[in-house]
Image 1 (tube, each protein chain N blue to C red):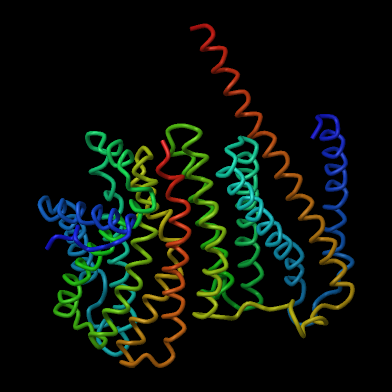
Image 2: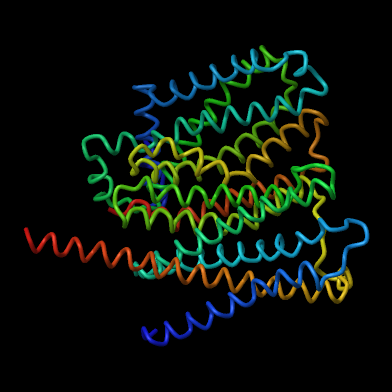
Length: 235
Length: 232
């Protein structure tokens, strides 16, 4: 499909091109998806050892499992975010990207889109494994997609902004978790709470305000990051 | 501000704080009556809550300094942001230490994952991130810029974090707000006012000292670099 023929306004088209470039790169090297997936696998296996499997059984274990799954997504996401700008730092590709007509806003949106899709891919692979190993009771499919997309988007937004920052620090990757996770507290709370609520009650009853807070956070982080990203990219 | 005016106001503030801190101590230990249910441990309230006010002041200075730095790139704005950050962080530590000391006799536990406690802990972690990012940066400008970005992001995230955690849990005593005007006896209210004033004054003084020091560091570094460059 020729995406160029889509009549998107300039910035969105640039953003989509950057995202497509990133995804194509990951599609050939598998560098980040592999690193994220390997981390998630190891973490899941370790949970199997570290926690008493009986304590994870339904119904009491559902909340614990929802929390564990989101921990895996957060930390596997960190593995990916930390290297989101790795390709640009190799062979000074930054200079070319910055010299292109795509503004910093388009770079941010494109990178966020790629990070988001990678995170969703990871979740698609991890959840069936968690179901097989830990008998995770899954929420209805449609609501699961909504919860995963909304919360992963916020994580990807913060991850892109802070990933760009740590890529410019020496030994910065070690700092990413410390910077990102406290800022993402409301998002993680909302993610765990809605996932648990949906898995237990299988309805949106009483979860409406969490959806509102998650969407609000996505919007807030998007606007803040859009303004602040320019300052991070500065030479 | 002219150096002389600065020195005079600085000296006045210094003296005022030096007098206010013992006064606050007296107010907390002597002036305030003993609380009927909680007894003596309640007196930590006169340090705990004013420290929380000082933390918020520090975060407000961090936010203002960060925005001003990103806008103007003046080293003075960065020095202010840095001072607000570090002083706020110290007072936040005091809040987190005094809270559990009070909570143990009052609630029977050192810590509970309640809304305001959790928010304060997360705030402490966010401030820690801001402090660390400077140390990781290769040069001063990058560190200042990244710290300012994190300062804005963190300060604006705090109300949201509080809202989210409050929806999740709630237990902290609420002494202020509509319908709570008589939660404190008049002498308690007076002692609390004195302690709050003293702690806010101390915070302003510390922020001023730290900002001046941070600014002097920048000036000194630039001067040294200038001399080295002149020598070739």
